[in-house]
Length: 275
Image (cartoon, rainbow, N blue to C red; front, side, top):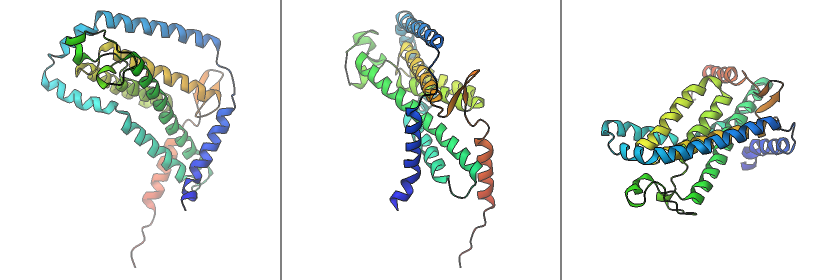
């Protein structure tokens, strides 16, 4: 019984691994050069903000009125990766298990597209989260609550203490990773996602959890990870594909109509009355 339930996951895993081992094209050298320049610019921006603004802003945030602090404490919870993973995995599993249930080839294809997009969100958040944890541990920057004791530039390399894991902001990494992924997968939802991500990032500074440079570094890491992951997926024809005009989304326009059709079928499905 368990083997039957896990069959869709095994089939999807095999298909993904087969696609991942094949590579359709090499990324453009010019694109890599532009990204290298952009990376250097962001590194410079992080250093500049840290030098000129971190200490001043951290002290200013201590005087933030409680009426503003309370809602920001609620907003900051939206940057926790747990609920994003749970939702994306639920969509991924639901789409896989709903396939091949007599819905028809077109709806099955749309569910496959939906599963791939949910997997992309899981993959980029896992990758960016792991990278964030590695950088945090290596850098070991003290959080703003230790400002009076050690100043804004105290680093305890290879630390695992929460108080010394300030750079980069994990919430900022998650927020920008998810917002960028959603912008690629559902462009209409991109701007609202970025606005919410920006609010989450602001909340991390306003509540004294991070310095501004921590947040900028986290935003850059989340954005860059998603960009590189999108290219890697497109090079293998997974979720995205490389076209003459650049990287485009596979199965555009399929998911929405399919979900509405499935919902309509379920809503009109007759309910058996108990005998």
